[in-house]
Amino acid sequence: MQPFKIVTLFIIISCVVLHQTAVAQSSSDSIHSYWKASIDYLSNAVYNGRKDSAVLPYVTPGIGYYNKSGWYVSACAAYAAAVNANRIDYFSLDAGYNFSIQNFSGDVRANKTFYNTQSTVIKSDIKGGIGTDLSYDFNFLQAGVSADIIFDNKTDIAFNINITHAFSWGPANQQWSITPTLAANFSSLYFYEGYTNRRVGKAIKKINPNVVSVKAATIVPNPGITLLDYEASLPITYDAKKWGIAFTPTYAIPMNKIETTTTATFTLKNRSTHTTANNTTPASEKNLSNAFYAEFTIYFKF
Image (tube, rainbow, N blue to C red):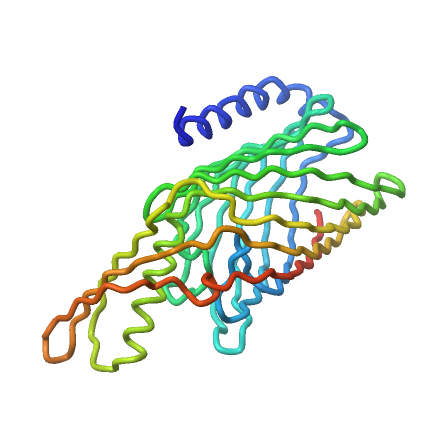
């Protein structure tokens, strides 16, 4: 069975589980609908163990509505806070449904993202996607798997598998938790073609100021689903009735170098055109290095 069909089937199965749990969740007296406003700081935009040559921190305010039945919608705007950036790097719209039944929990979700044309983040070619995740609680640990169809210049398929164990204490309306997590991320690699196209066009214009326009076509010779990184993280959260905080340090170990070849046609001011074909694998990809980054969030519920 093709990966696209597998992911689609996984999403359909989640939707069936969603339908079976909707009535039970909406009838729970302990769940209330609420709005949540948040502000998030991310120390570096790392995606599947990959990062741009320059550190790119984000400050991201967001707002969302969470219905007691499990449905939610949210929106955020990410501000690139690097010294040489200082711009809104992307807007994101999300909708989904969280569900749980006995030891199973998960969600089904959809996303639409609008990236700034100046963005240098690895996933800047991604336009949105649909996905789902499922988790099962074995009591001594929780095992999870997620699957996503990602829309960029071409369609990517992504998988994540993870194991976690949550340590929680305190009353329900003032609860602390620490959740050690180990994960592995797999994806097809078309998103890297779009990212490389952006880099090549900017590099040619920077090197030669006489360039008026650039058309680049990048190919990843082996774009199939690939293990991209292992991650170890330690989410720490405090959730009160009206507010909460979350801090998540993550250590990512990238795997399997992504090779790229780019054919670029550029036009000069004198209207002459030139075409080049080069191996455009970034130095950071040729020499993969582990990455440590952290995310801090504070939110208010009303």
